[in-house]
Length: 107
Image (cartoon, rainbow, N blue to C red; front, top):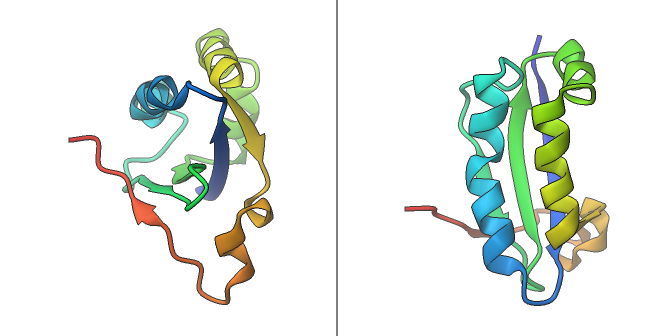
């Protein structure tokens, strides 16, 4: 059974474009390794410039495998270089009953 995740990233100063490039490849890499499902990925931007990504892991086991996979670990190092992981409730929008975010389109 899959498991949806909501991940929030705050880009470091001047690293927004770099973060977007990594986000563009994030789930496709996970999919290529059998770790994420083919369900739609949703990428959104908060008013403060943070990004929110929603995708589905294949399973809890896939999450565990990701934390040991050298390709995934290398990708996560790139994330850490250009952003900070933040809790969703750090975003102003999360204080609303129905939080709204701007969609991000890679096209």
